[in-house]
Amino acid sequence: MPVPELRICLDEADLAAAMRFDARRGLTSSPKYLPMRLHYDGRGATLFGELTRQPEYYPTRCEREILSGRAADIAAAVTAAAPVSVVELGAGLAEKIRPVLDAMHERGRLESFWPFDVDASTVRDVLLDLATAYPDTDLGGIVGDFTLHLQHLPDHHDSRLVAFLGGTFGNFTGMERGQFLRDLREALRPGDWFLVGADLVKDPEVILAAYSDAAGVTAEFNRNVLYVLNHRLDADFEPENFEHIALWDAGTATVDMRLRALKPMTVDVAGIELDISFAVGEEIHTGISTKFHRGELENQLQASGFELVHCWTDSQGYVGVFLAKVA
Image (cartoon, helix red, strand yellow):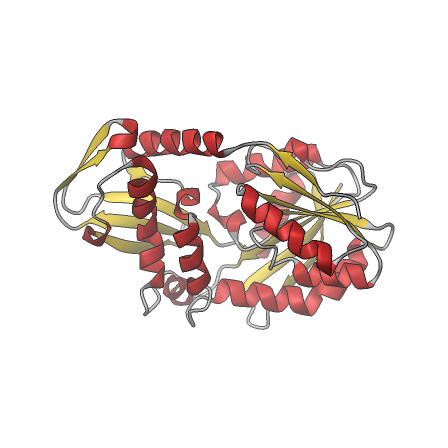
């Protein structure tokens, strides 16, 4: 088997520079904010894994139900004309896409697989693991930011499927989502495929419970962004003095996550030579999670040059997995 190709679009220096930029811009804005991507260091990834196992947190469980139950249907649809090269954005350990890869491999129609992630060591670990699982499949990896580096998608295959799972699609603002879809459409060719998981609008109590679990894992995950800044930027945040807040905005169908200061504080972020003051009750906006109506998402896809082919939901109708084709 050939050695997997690894496309390096950013390195540790790039990530460190981006963190300094994000922290300075967000903490000096009004209101203050920190991007969701800053949560995911090693501790953050562990906490998120624990969160997905909480009884209130339905998104991962429901998406897994769909992908496991519909993997053969997805494989049949996208490989009907030709073998397919699969790229997973934000792949992590590539656990989400595995049922679909297995179904394609069983049909002899998995031409190649490319995990796309910001962490080079994770991409290498996935390629090492999958080399054993799929010895007759070409493997490659992309180390990059999928909001910046979609032009580096592999382009030497007849048909491609880009998978974007785990609900990350809902973490974009409306403008960011539109830009992402346009960039993705520009990077693909007619006949290529896009598979995206999306949380659907439902009872707000069900939604909010997933972001305020009884065990407090979501709260600790949210506060982890402060631990990241302490560790990476030599800040002196007191995470225990920030309260986790999750609010539902019915007008935008969005969960808004925040950290609220419980006392007056001045924080020294030495790594960017910045002192930040907090009043009691002042908040840092730390991320959003948009929920979708099926028709709304179908319209967004169509406006960006994609044609919806299938939409599958879990047994409760909580989560949707949408399969679209480049028009």
